[in-house]
Image 1 (cartoon, rainbow, N blue to C red):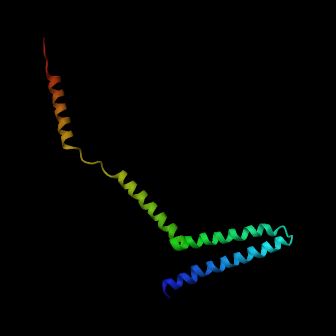
Image 2 (cartoon, rainbow, N blue to C red):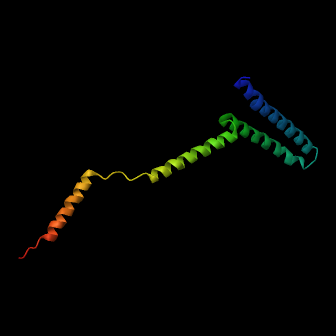
Image 3 (cartoon, helix red, strand yellow):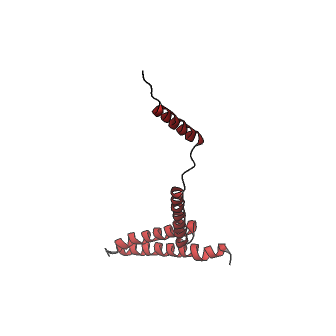
Length: 121
């Protein structure tokens, strides 16, 4: 079975069925509420919310595929970023700058010379 038909049968068709059922239930409960059954007002609001929820879930599956796979991929990406950050922190310090080493040696040499110097004025 091709990917397109699989999506139609497992993703789009269930959405259509759920939305049609929610529309039917909404109109049915609205009719009952008009007859005076007060509890039906709550169901008149509930069924469209369920239809919207079904649409949101359908959209999530359509964009990201399996929710478990989406969460797993996101978790793995975060683990990799944490691992890369930890490796960057554990990396040895970069080698010292040769110019800085030469400067420090020069300053140390000057200090030795000044310490050994005895000027009597």
